[in-house]
Length: 259
Image (cartoon, rainbow, N blue to C red; front, side, top):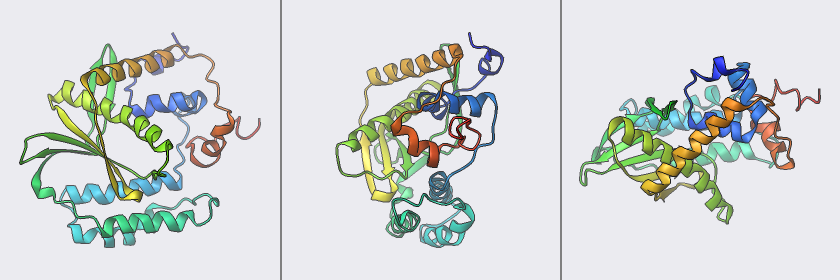
């Protein structure tokens, strides 16, 4: 049992919560125990802006022909952080790729019943409170099948690392599918990942066995969190870019600041 059990025990755990623990235990400590202020970076702000555009479309607040203008009109107010200086031209590339995606966006939502748009779903698994927030859940009017969609702004590179990226995302969406079934009796038939900057949709197959194993993985990480005492940082060479450019806790991190 952790010293901070009084904080951890009543906590609702999300995918981002447990994933951040696996990324860096000290980042998790600063965020969830010490409640330091989250500092958004340009990547997260860009992703949020794209999410907002698509959320407004699926909620009927924007028509498909309004998306480009909304994206352009509200970009600078929503993406206020600076992109990293390297590689060169990153800020321009992100803006143009988001714009290009929306200029060519032609999804016909009239073919679907909209089940969930960015809505929180709470459930419990073996005493662990879980919360998920799917980007979008649709039901095909033609087949009656349920589709789970999520938008990602990480760009696929067309190499072997893409398989690893998709597999990592799969954990998140299989967890969502499990909770949708457990809580709402919605059986997801297809998981779609929309890679916005590639303008590419990846269909992710999964099995009931994978869903069960995924819940066991989730529970295993939560158990580790409940036992953790050291909260050590991830100081690997590979984590340096993450620490400097992506981590929302980097301003509060004593290890990054060298103290």
